Length: 254
Image (cartoon, rainbow, N blue to C red; front, side):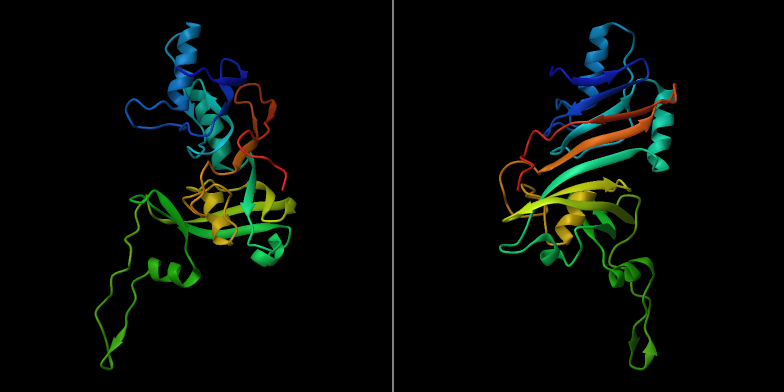
């Protein structure tokens, strides 16, 4: 079993590095994930029945720093911080720029700003997409169409909203740290944790993450996306905790 890279550990929680390619938690039999890796780590310490509470998640191909709870009480308090947005998460994302264009020229946005979109998760494809304003209106209510001068019967929405594919607001702040020919490095503060959120929103701008074959070009490798910073309040001591790492799967130079 793979040994975890622990940045901090006490009786309540574990802060560790999640490598790209390892799932946070999976239902697939025989596939290792961070929960099983950390459970094995605790079992080796001989400190009782392991409990690993998932507080937040990272996409399987994304690397980054994560915190997991070791008690149910810690899990509840940390999860509450995630829910009320007091749990801080920052990312580095290296994006692909169109040939001969800067980030500003490619997107029509400033170097620093906020992206606010509505995205929908399609579970069958394990993929999300940005929903435009008119499309959102069509999704949210039935639409009547006149036919032969009369109101026709109700038309069914194109999709039926479920807990899995409902439309949700997605918000992040970004800052272009540096850019060169063909790429730019962004520092991103995530305010909502939607499925593939950063990857979807940046691809929608026309600047997909380098190496992201799901939302960008068919490139080899893994997405140039790293959760480099988390900050939270310790669930027991109340101490402010901050942890940062450097990306290992991509160069931050452009």
